[in-house]
Amino acid sequence: GQNIDQPTEMTATEGAIVQINCTYQTSGFNGLFWYQQHAGEAPTFLSYNVLDGLEEKGRFSSFLSRSKGYSYLLLKELQMKDSASYLCAVLETGGSYIPTFGRGTSLIVHP
Amino acid sequence: DVKVTQSSRYLVKRTGEKVFLECVQDMDHENMFWYRQDPGLGLRLIYFSYDVKMKEKGDIPEGYSVSREKKERFSLILESASTNQTSMYLCASSLESGAGRNEQFFGPGTRLTVL
Image (cartoon, rainbow over all chains, first blue to last red; front, side, top):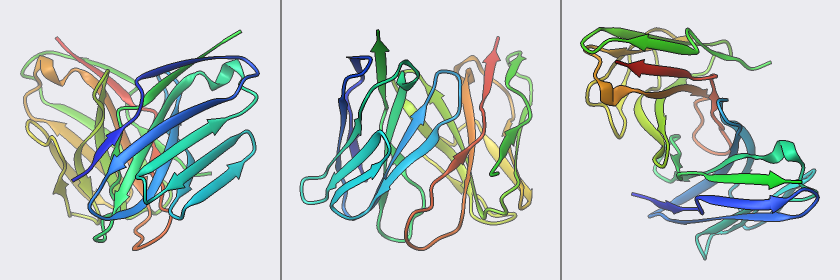
């Protein structure tokens, strides 16, 4: 089984940088996803990490440390439209293609 | 462009009614999923299917059933709706893949209210 933990809510200022953490415990790690979900909308894929290190994609980056069971999503140059929930999801080994989702972090960006 | 559609955005039903939620994907994906999403609880898996006519229980299957007669369509059925099934229901699909990135694509969701 898995235990995925992320903060419930965060606030940040427009133009700033924010880091959303996700810790997990799993018997066999096989990848970690980040999704973004605006209020009333479907989650959309942001990133996937399976190896240690930082993956950068525009203003968003995702980091993974498998030995620490830790990932973070880094959002730079925050915009008001970045206000959303950010979901961390972990895949286990064993042939499963079904990720387990954390409860999500609600990010509020204010002017 | 990848697309997952759900039959209704909003639905209001009465206790005891039979409810059908339909999901269609146009990406020829093998895997399809039904989740419910509630405040403070996140996404919880109800059922999933990895092939036509195949289904597996997720974490919270009680009170639900599913049907997958065609590859592109996955239906969620509430045999006798109850008020505790008031929720946002999200359908998703993904490619069948033994390794590597196989992210899920989500539909827009159906907000079901059971009175």
